[in-house]
Length: 322
Ligand SMILES: Nc1ncnc2c1ncn2[C@@H]1O[C@H](COP(=O)(O)OP(=O)(O)OP(=O)(O)O)[C@@H](O)[C@H]1O
Image (cartoon, rainbow, N blue to C red; front, side, top):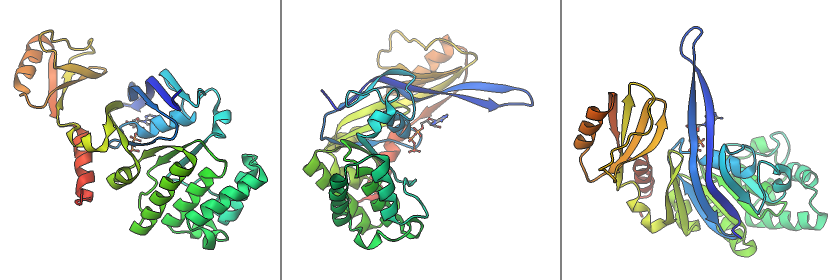
């Protein structure tokens, strides 16, 4: 059995927007749009994509904070949304932008509270804490209140906090964001060791390609709520090169556009009167536009280059050594 299993998982948010004095518009946002993947126990996987692609929403569903709108999701055989507390004992979560530590307390006191909250056996707790203190170099920081720690120190503190209860899987959301080179190296070294020693399964969200390169053999790319790549890092260069998107605004809400004789063109998303069509990047958009204009009540349109390509380009620019 795979440790993490997603089959056609969806999350749709109902967003209400004020459009006039008394008028409100209801709109559906498909944050995650039918994602399927499997992660075996002990694998470290990168989960990347542009802002707003649906990464955090996926992680929130994996922890049980959010309930999927559709599809099937299991972590260690558990449905996270239904058995969130049971799952909490088996997972660890680190959100780079937020801390789970108590701001006014020294690190050591935060850890003591977690010791009790998770009912970690004393010997186990001591052993895990000692290990984290050693590998994450926390010895001199244990008596320092969290508010006085630098970002890199706090992050190391947060990672230790997520591991005291021996989780089988660790979700890391931007664990190296804003860290200096030395702190980054420390965090990466630690994660590598953790994975090798304990076979902890790791799902890593990051904008830093070096994180992925040094830690993950496999990378998944999410874009507009869909999985657009799942494979080795080396193949990532090709992502997004193959398709562009035509965004069309029709006069009214209609079923997905059908162009029978164009099998390479497919509707990837519909929101009210707006539809997104993917088409081969090598071809011209002109004949496609002409056909849609002739057969549908077209109001407006635009052609989009894949967002994901710019993200990946940016990642490569930030690390020209690759
Ligand atoms: N609670 C919510 N209510 C309504 N819309 C939401 C909610 N949470 C997320 N969204 C929308 O869902 C989409 C996916 O958001 P998500 O935070 O999962 O993206 P992300 O890939 O984590 O982005 P980032 O890299 O910026 O953190 C976005 O369009 C976002 O605006």
